[in-house]
Image 1 (tube, rainbow, N blue to C red):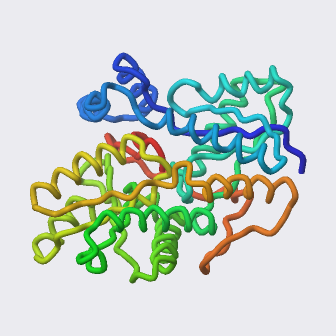
Image 2 (image 1 turned 135 degrees about the vertical axis):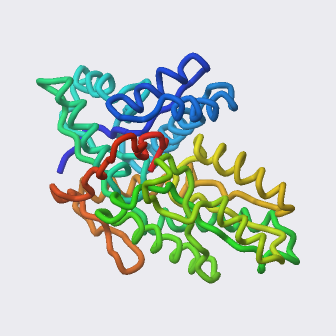
Length: 347
């Protein structure tokens, strides 16, 4: 099928202090989340001067993709639209219409299948197209890619670089722990999220020649009474410390594609602070970011759809479908005053 543009779709984030509250109000619009919870999250952004790293990282990804495409004879103009902050998705699609784009592929900054990581992005695209109205380009989201060789190799390389920062005498014994965003169990039970994460951690560990490291979760935003995926990374660190003998630890944020707020705050700041308190030398592996094989993977996903070539995948789950079933990954059941993963920058 012919496509004439690529659209990067992401969560968005504030660029300066005065953006923080309006941004979070956009995130939470229509959701019954206590304002005090929103203000707690605002403090995470204030800790970094009100600027989320996610927008700069998306700009870097777009530049890398532009170079990758031109270097391989693939010249698709690249657009960028966010769910919650400028450039907003509807504004970008309006610009695409003005530029004469008729059919585009969309790359969402999430590797795993779940409501917030896949289906909600498709809903966002269709809602924005409806807002733009007549002449809005047709947009098809690229498949998820948790087991694509390019993603697995990029993460394995990041873990290897992290392990190199641990003294050689303790490297083999250092636990490698994988983290992903916690989601409500009601969402996890109706999506492939956990199965895909487990396969990714196994594939990365096998690539490194190590036993599969544990998978834990972070960045929970739900009410304490509601069941979410566990264990939490900080609880796991405390348990690891209580067992004794741990001096070094590698944390791998496999569930995230860039070093955005929930990586630099929840891991580098909170988990890192806990490790310092407990006397554990923590090294946090970088995310896929603009790793060359990850950028090449995105080009390969585009060519799959344009040329209907074989879909690459490792492991046993196989490649995700190009077009999801109408009933896949439904929205989670939301009891009163339950904060959903709406506050996450990427699934």
